[in-house]
Image 1: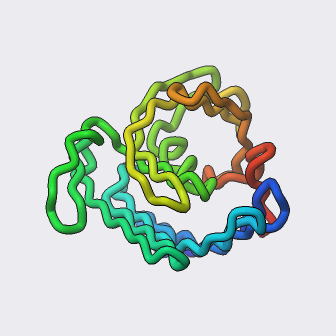
Image 2: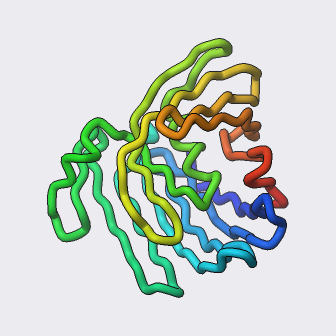
Length: 184
């Protein structure tokens, strides 16, 4: 597989926040660079980058919020061990293979691609959850169930939240009802 880039844009549920991102697929890695301008009622400007290995295990995460100046850098072994950008061990994230940045639907693509569920299959996972705009890091339980050829039931086990999300052929989110809609 040669390198392929996909340009993406999502609008948030308020209609006032927008994300513009670029995903790069190669034979050995996948990565995304994005910028999010938050909604009018809760303004923020977020830049982020995520890199994955060939099995879609998250390996690198960078998040920076411009208004507050907060930054977060994470490194993962791809086997559930995480460190900060300074090399500090993060045992509270043990077992997480994916990152979930709350302000972008892209991070739902990571477990969708990694798990490669068949129709009717379900999997419970742990993610490194990054809340936005404060960039607070925590561990969160989630469940993905493939309910259609391009539809997944997403459940946050800790927050008792669920949505049916639709994806394109690359597993990139098209519709996350009430939260995000793809425009490009």
